[in-house]
Length: 341
Figure 1 (cartoon, rainbow, N blue to C red):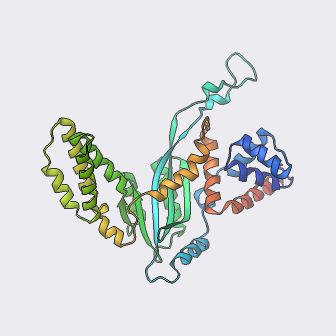
Figure 2 (cartoon, helix red, strand yellow):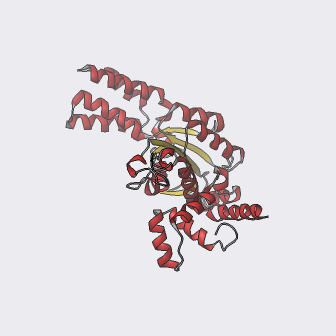
Figure 3 (cartoon, rainbow, N blue to C red):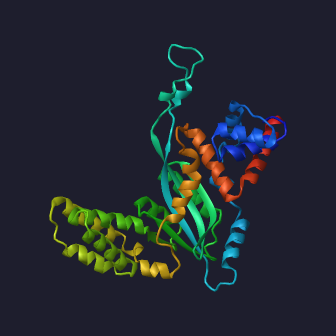
C-alpha cells in the first residue's frame, strides 16, 4: 500500500485513526468502504504519514492565514485580535522496553502490565481569532516536548511570517510561567500579555480556604477580589491582602504567595484595560485545543503511547484541525515517489 498502490486507502485509514482507536477505525473502514487493512499496516501507514512532520508543514499557508483574518475583520474598523494560548496537557507514554520480547521467551511481547510508562508533558500552542463570542481557529501545534522545543516552533512561525503583526493585534493568554514570558517578549514584544484569570482565582481560593475555611465569607471574599481585578483595581486587591491578619502559618504562607503572584503579574492582570482592548481574560481557547487535539484521542482509557508514535499522532491531529491534512498527503506522495525512483 505504501509502495505504489492506490492512496485512497491509506488516506481513509489516517482520517479514521486520528479520530478513533485503531481497532475501531478498522471496523468503520470495512463498514463504510468494504476495504480492510491489517493492524500492523494501520500503524505503519499512520506513522509513515506523520513521520518527522514539523509545525510549518501542518500550518496553514500565510495566504490562508490572511484569508481567515480578513473574513473576521470584514466591515470592522478595529483590527482583529489574534489570541495566542500556550498550555500543556499530559500523555500516558509506553516505555521502549515494551517493544522487546518477554525475557526467556522468543517472539513474545511484554505483558500489558509492563506497557505503562510515565505521564509526559505535551506542550501546545493555539492561535485563534476573536469574532464576538466565537473563537475562530487559526493554527494549533502540540507535541510531547519541553519549553525549549515549543519556543523553537514559535520562532519558526514568526520567521515564516504566518502572523501578520501589522494587520492584527496580538494577545498572549497563559498561566504566567516565566519561560512563556521570555519567549513572547523575544519574538512578539508588541503583544499584550494576559494572566489567565482562573489562575488568579486559584491563588485567591487558597487564601480564602486557609483563612476562612469552607464558608460563605470565603466565597464572597474571592468574588469581591476578582471583581476588583476585573475593574482594573489591582492595587486595591493587593492592599486588601496586606491588611488581612493571618490566623495560622498556613494562611500567612497562602497570603504571601498570592501577594507575590499578583504583584509579579500586575501588568497582565489589569483586566479592565485588557478587556477594552479586545483581549480575552481566560484560557478557554487553548484548553479547548488541549481537549480536541490531545485528550479525545491520546488519553482514552487504556491508551499508552510510545513517544515517537505520539509525535506522529499529535502532528496529524493538528494538521486535521488546521485544515492541512491534504497537503500533508501531497508531501507523503512525493516521498513515496522519491523512494521508488
